[in-house]
Length: 555
Image (cartoon, rainbow, N blue to C red; front, side, top):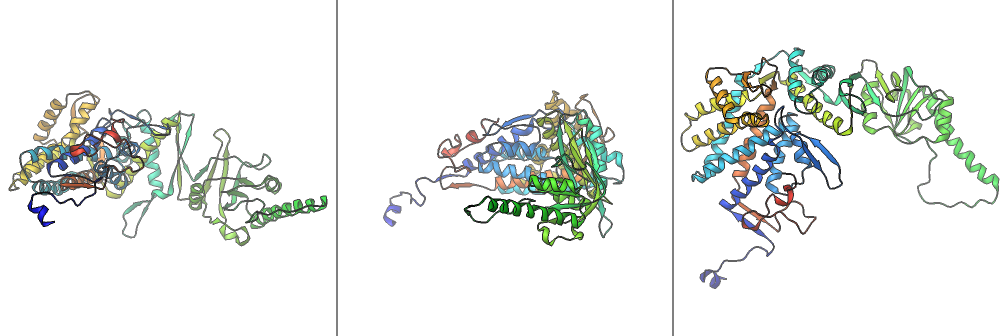
């Protein structure tokens, strides 16, 4: 070994299949991958953003401009790109909206960091500068943010409308925003400290095709999208005792395979009589409990359906588990898994009505905390995108109610933050100052992309916005419909402060994580999908996979 080292030959410590990229090549590789992800979703940002059509390997089509949905559905096969996708997922979990903004800012931070690396600025200095800028940005957001009265329904509606704008809900956004605010009101409670807590667990969303989105409605209680199991059963029940059953009302089958030899027709009749007796006992047990309505998660035998109808009991089979769990809160019932041990205390209480036109059961309980938002759309694709937009708006309004702080939208906050961070950079010594200034430039990507997606000149727009903020107009943002710079807060373009803080923090941390990597060692093909030996991503430095294989078809 020592002789080989003396001769200047390298020691081979890695397997033949392993690959390695280090130093500047590793930085270029990571930055290119992260920027590719960010650029894939930038065109969806804002009210004028475009949609993406995603087709999976099974041929299922998804049409959306929701950032996190696009990134989850894309067949991305790159470790660095997946780190950036985590930014979108974190943003979705923590704030509910702003996923595209978070990913776009992360990509722009790395783009500007690449320019600093070209100037021989060490990654450590860039990372420190980005961290300082991120912390300062959070403080500035808190200073700029407007504290609101969470009972101000008009402002909450504006927040919901801003979140839904451009997400397939444009025509009916006012009606939907009203439903969203009412729904959040229904599930908001005060904790021990007197703070508002929004419990979205008590809010259920159901969808239905064939109708206009403007016919969506909010219902107090739950919805069961099923038919009665027998035509002779009642269609509604007021002040009803409701049984939620997770046990089949069917003949009990043996646990093992058995064979029975029948030598006499009477013996066969005895078996049939025994089965009938079992079903009769189950129905009698339900009747003895005093149940007027049964929502069963499993099957109901045809003969049992007949007995239930004779008892005047309304029954539904194959109800979804999630629906039964939601009805627990609505009617105050327990889900019964064993009829033999069930008691009257397990029953819930409420009204069950049938909407024959929509073929739905409406279930309302006394003082029910749970509500259902019934969303309607013309087709499956429309209603799916509508549901995604409404889910984001629900999270945004919930965050606003809990946090109580809002900001002006339309790029106003980003331009103001950039201006303040440039002033802050003057107080930062060393090369970190350049990183803070690069961070400020990165934030201005948002108004530039908003303008570009609206067909406006992004440079002219940014110049006008900077001029307005230099004149002290903190809430001056872009009206993408008219192309004018105006007070977006007064215009009703309102965003929650928490979502913006989370987006900037997540983007900065993701960029710093990528910049800190100077060596990539792979045991084989640099791919996160090991199910295919061929077709690995190619084109990255040093022969290691790039974005080609995983994202080429989407970009």
